[in-house]
Image (tube, one colour):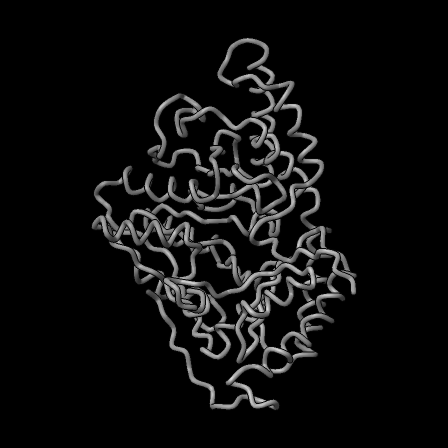
Length: 403
């Protein structure tokens, strides 16, 4: 049996590209100076950081490299954007976001509510899409910022963030998007949009962990999260992580070069994987908006079994994927994304996300297609909700949750 590892969890993190590693290595032992220093050691690092800033700018389609602020991760960028909007506009106390955001946004919003701020979470339909009429109705003069993800990390569903930013701008409201999953997978051209702030994370596009960035449109009111030194034009204090920044720049350059051709290959393999599994496994369906999603992501709900059990058996075969459900306070609960979409209870527990990358091969996809059906059959035969031919009890509806 072939147990060569197969990694299909690229929405969680990606392998650092060898070219990125090669670009970073000199900044550990040769070009190790502090970019703030005026001597040659610092100047060489300063030039490298400027080049990396330009590489990130190019992938984002930003107007100027000064709009790029390096951070430690996407979560820091998210917090910086939202907290800055609130601090810069003390007369505004409301945040609008969505019910399916990453915890980097939702956990912050829960804390803000405890601090007395008002948070509105936009609902989604069965495909995970937003109702823009509901969105428009929530906009008012007390809204400081709207934060909506560009692409959902579980289903890959794409939100119309450019249109949403236009609507917000017409009301004089700041707009932020968490583009951690989208960058490098879909074209981004920020200079043609009304997006004020955008968050990204290096480890989702073959750069190292511990580096991210915040795009801040020129002229946008801003208050820094971290105060101290003058780094990042006084907008993010702390000595720059020069090696990681160089790596992020190189990763953005590679992503831009491979955006069209690379993603077309990934999309074909994703479609083959999804179609192959669904053709062989009954009582299973893709979640999210399959006609409008990231090219690398498919999330399949397998009814009447637990996603964690599927993952454990896949792992024994050397296959890494992820589940849409999470263990909370000792009890298994479907993910907030599945709950918000109203996925039936019998399926919400059995969602598996397969997320591919440019490293994924056809042979790997073929192996996963062959591996999944016997695993599902084995688990259903052990399930009290399955009688050997189909569900043992009528399906119970699962009401959406927007909490």
